Length: 345
Image (cartoon, rainbow, N blue to C red; front, side):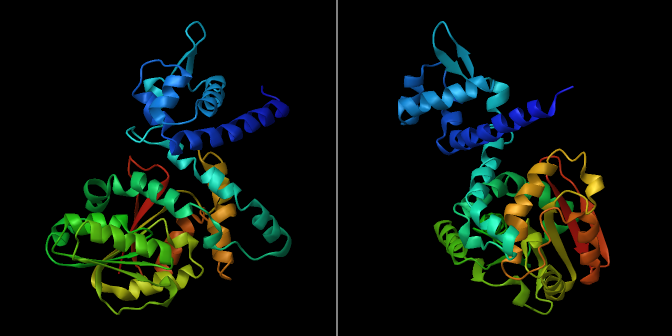
């Protein structure tokens, strides 16, 4: 049995390693190494257009963590295929991309400490790079399967999208989901709402670049819109639990749907009850992200502070309280971290 001091040493090592994995992703070192034969630190640095001394120190951290292989006779480094498949942009799932949340969250530690002492929250604008990292995360959990995997879970939706319906994405971020759907289904119209000027401008820029004429993006607080029965489909990808007033947001969504409309919500997979999450493989990570981001950005607006792990029991109840009498929950193979809620009148 591992002693507690050994567990703490393991935590120290793996916490430090998270920073190295993030750096490996941001510098594209994992992508470069995956395409190289066993190579010297100099050759790897040259291929990645990076400083050799820093690359070498990064490599030895990865060697001692048994992620990168090292041949002491030849002084050559390599990354096994089974590991590069989980650490590169071309792999099956890029964990190094998701691990970027660790250094992003660490940047607000002092502000979070102040909240522990005085209450309140840390606003979105304090999180450097959060929108970039979230956009990367969404590309894995949403964009990769949006057209062929996520939208088809709503019966008949693809056929409707090929005709002429109106879609709203609440908390659209940089608009990648909206723009992808708009490009795929040019006869339907897509609207994106977010309260961040930065991401709305990013969304508009991408739409212009793609020459799309069926999109619109607006800076909008989701608690303050109400379009009586205007939309056939409303989506919210990993956005509702961050809201200051999620009950009001869900009611606005319900009121803005046409009578036969559908609300498709992606949100964190978990239970509202702590005891049911004891064996959740990512529970410590998700509760930490919740404390350092999801909960605090809501509390910064004097909000409810649901947190990432609000859970399916509370989510289902809140959807029903908002007026959705029919709520179905699905989980998709590509995204074990989230549930997909299909809510109807």
